[in-house]
Amino acid sequence: MSTSDASAAGAPRPLHGLLLLLATIAGVTVANIYYNQPLLDDFRRSFPDAAAAWIGAVPAGTQLGYAAGMLLLAPLGDRVDRRRLILLQTVGLCIALFVAATAPTLPVLIGASLAIGVLSTIAQQAVPFSAELAPPERRGQAVGIVMSGLLIGILLARTAAGFIGQYFGWRAVFGASIALLIALGVVIVLRLPRSRPTSTLGYGQLLASLWHLTVELRGLREAAATGAALFAAFSLFWPALTLLLAGAPFHLGPKAAGLFGIVGAAGALAAPYAGRFADRSGPRAIVTMSIALIAIAFVIFALSSASIAGLVIGVIVLDVGVQAAQISNQSRIYALRPEARSRVNTVYMVCYFIGGALGSAVGVAAWHALGWTGVCVGGLGFTAIAGWVHWRTRPRESAPAS
Image 1 (cartoon, helix red, strand yellow):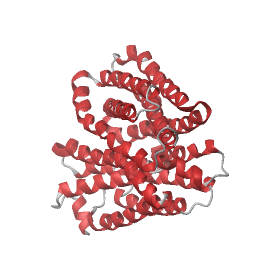
Image 2 (cartoon, helix red, strand yellow):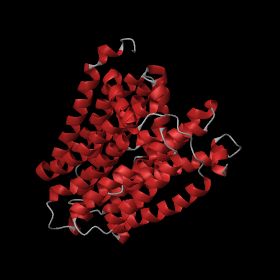
Image 3 (tube, helix red, strand yellow):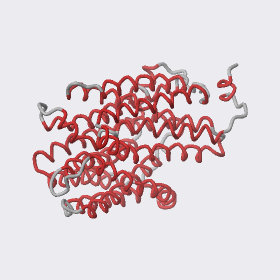
């Protein structure tokens, strides 16, 4: 039996170190779907012959790809060794990033972005892997550590991409990610144990069970629709922010847009408190508050088209609202079917990132059609959809769970 097999079987191994490794895997890989957001103006200048509206297909492609990867790859974690799956996806992700870094045309970059999104779902293997490695009494803590790494990766991705893009060009951002993934892959080979499959279902049966869960669980459908609409509003904002800062009166490059990712740390800091409040008051109360916060954020944005301070305040409010809603929605769906949490999460996250892809595309299109006002109206529109779904289903929430 190999060292990795022994670890999976319960032989002594520093659990905290493994959790930190999984947190790093989650953060480094999920960051790849956010690197392109501060770089949209650079893409526009690199491909001047392309229609300006098609620039928005780059971030939309990564998010749509992530949704597809969640659907097609994430369920495999119950069927095959997660370590092997993580390594194979890492190799594929490096190849997709190389294609993006050397893309001669915008359509090639869009296609590579779609593949990057599909393969970046490594993060969705790291989170359940942490629950598998930890003993039951430490499972919640283990998942929390890995989720923190994932959130940090999301927050710092825009900042890192903005700085590298400003000084070395947008192609260097993808090159730096390849180097980081190669180093991470070596550590995975040396340190990460193998996992034991927990399901004997065939691949087709795993995918079919996702549909059955969606049909059977009304609460899952409601949470997925609300989450998708709110993430659409969130994803609509970030690409448009890059375009706003590039023009008058700011004339700022991708570095400035990336710095707003640090401001988003407020969302990560609010996450534990949102979880505690959801335990006490129920997730519905948190989602209601989140919808209100996101609506307020877009009102602040509408009044801050020439104010950095206003944009910073709006970003803080937006990130707190989105993170609180995400934690509350996931808390709600995990209680629906405890024995199928991975697949329930897959359904939710697929819808979530489809919403994000739609929001990215609408945000850039709204910018080119109606400017910053159109972006803010679009964000309020998605938030209103989330509110309609949330409040429309309120009487059903009190019904006993099936």
